[in-house]
Length: 120
Image 1 (cartoon, rainbow, N blue to C red):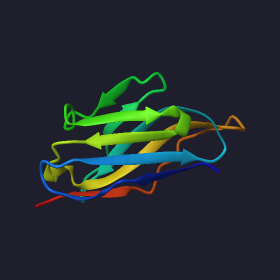
Image 2 (image 1 turned 45 degrees about the vertical axis):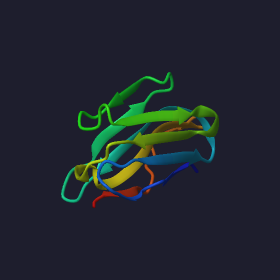
Image 3 (image 1 turned 180 degrees about the horizontal axis):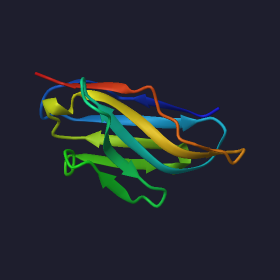
């Protein structure tokens, strides 16, 4: 069984920074893309950032220039550095990954989410 566990959420003032982490564990053979999505109250889940296995990245328009995604492939971990946070960044942030298990099954799990609140 493969699972994703996020950490690093919390309360931060506008203009502040937070760093989220997401670690994949279990019967993993390889991981392709890893990414972050978020869902604010009353809104649909949206892309925040994705990083491919070759470290190619792409970002949602609302976070470009403020957020940076990175990964440590040796640790099966993806990070999201969030700077210049705004109240509209408040949401539950979810980790997602494209994983081949040791049984060469393709799975696309989601983490349970971590809450980020930007407020003074």
